[in-house]
Image 1 (cartoon, rainbow, N blue to C red):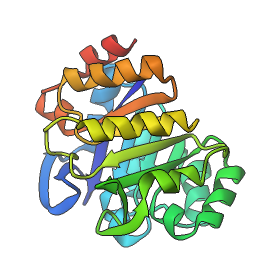
Image 2: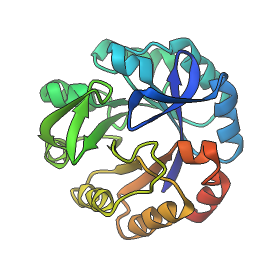
Image 3: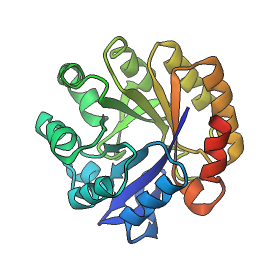
Amino acid sequence: MEILPAIDLRNGKCVRLRQGDYSRETIFGDDPVAMAKRWEDAGGQRLHLVDLDGAKAGAPENIDVIRNILKAVEIPCQLGGGIRSEETVQTMLEEIGLDRVIIGTQALKQPEWFKEIVKKYPNRVCLGLDARDSMVATEGWLDVSKTSALELAKEYVGLPLAAVIYTNIANDGMMQGIDDVTLNDFVLLAEMGLKVIASGGVTTIEDIKKLNDIALEHPNLIGVITGRAIYEGTISLEEAIHLTK
């Protein structure tokens, strides 16, 4: 199970939000490139980048910062936030050099388009499943749909997805741990045959242990994203990586 440090970008800075709320922002650094290097040096296996401005605008906004991060680190990087057209997917993967892109909003709104993109870029597109009360949220989490996250995921079983990144928004950035319902959702997704990356609420090494125990039984749980916890020091990235190895 990979540990993916999260770098959330807003106005060129490294920030974290609470529950995806843009008005509840903490700035953790003015230099996201230095932060990316820090997490690589600490043993991070892959970086999870989020363009928060892009999620709102509908297209990536922090492209210069993303380019600079990719130049500075050797580990693979994935990006979510505003990936809503084939042109953007192509630019991000082929020109900018990202390893993977994450698509959420368009997977809900245009499922057939999403399936074609996944087939065109096998194992390089992640489904971003952001949920509140197990219902899918879109548009940078500003809207909550009437679609069940697990029902949406079922539509994409059998496609060459890189992973499903499942985030419980209620937990995200709140430093309260992962709840049992969300842990069970990870298991259900893994049992569908989907590769799963857990996200939202990872607060202590105990959360990492719980996820690692699930991953040992369900190898389709391939990763966990951690953000605020490694910035605030409630999880040591080195310890988490050592535990999962």
